[in-house]
Amino acid sequence: MLFKDIKGKIIDPLQHTIEIIKKYPYAEIHIGSDSQSVGKKTFYATVIAYKLGTRGVHYILNKKKVSIINDMWTRLWKEAEDSIDAAEWLTKQISVKVEIDMDYNENENFKSHKLISAAKGWANSLGYKVNIKPNKQIATKAADHHCK
Image (cartoon, rainbow, N blue to C red; front, top):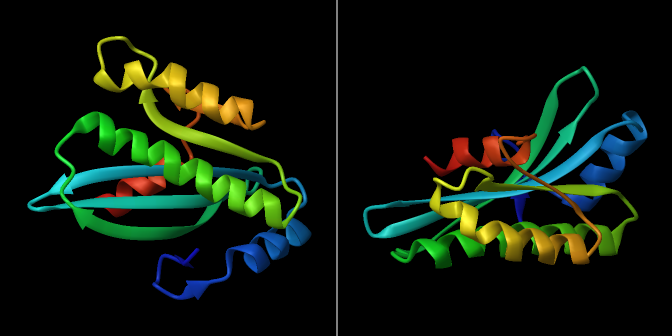
């Protein structure tokens, strides 16, 4: 998986995570994705965020663009797939606890609400704690910023 810092420098996520945990053993690791369709492309960003206690958040990201995905359900489901794939990849390499932030809303008035049961159930079945809106959204906030 190709991750970069916010300046565009390629970062090895395994080594980077190990270094963060050594320096900040209390760090929380959150993984989340977001997407946005613009023109004829859909942009995805997946973020590994490290919440450093009261010292802020540091993150690395993977960005990609694909042909436009007009179907909202398909586009939003891909966000869950990308986050879970990144979490599975990272936790299979090194033993770390990861939370997955999903950009789906608990409020039934939002269309993304209909994905919560399946996506959260999938992530929970793999052992991940899942955060959905309006609760803690660390990684998805950063991912949203980089999709625009």
